[in-house]
Length: 291
Image 1: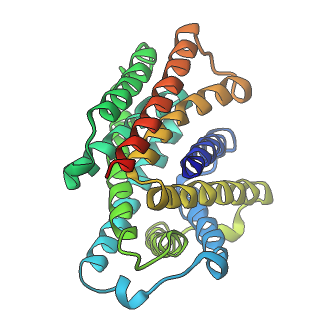
Image 2: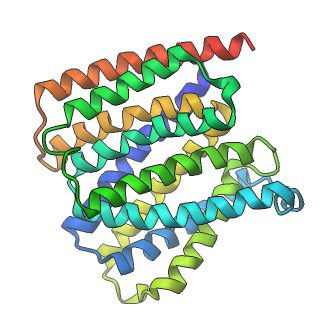
């Protein structure tokens, strides 16, 4: 049961990264032209700093055959969903954003079951589906029914996140690279793409802006490293299931920090989601134990 704490910590860090990114883009009004390459500069910096201790990799194995194809797909998918995600995040409320991103864990499981149908389990599917439905239902009034271009961007970014999770999980199964080394490689190459495209002037940014970018970078790196380790050690299904907790954390923090309203219906849904996730977690362990 110890491995469940990895995706759980990933959920907490991911929730924090969303709030910091939202504050940076809206309250601090950092332009996307500076924010996207800026945040990836710090993501690269902090992820590379993790390599001396956790960066084991066989690059000969990684850069050959199917592994190279998976790596290139991860980089392309990551670049696309990050651009769409940050544009959408800058325009939508936190609760709207998480109302859409709640679909990511379920999409991750569906895509993973498509590639590995032997890991499909009806109990986990029903529990995860019910938890996803509860969030969609609880936030239906103003979040999920707001269909505009930014909603569509966030929706496409969620599909990209889910696809990347599955691709990362598949590549980590080969043992060609550690989660830290894979994340550092992926982030560095995506940063280069964004830097060449946006041509930012990071040196002209104010110290406060750089501080927010650095904070976003270290929290984002922590969240993604934990997610990558969760995908390797806890598996795609369990990691995705626990990540359904992210909206619970974000909505709660948004009420306290950003003064966004939350209803009793939503609070009740959060409790039910927690129960369903616990059930799915034990069902997943039972499934793996019988294999």
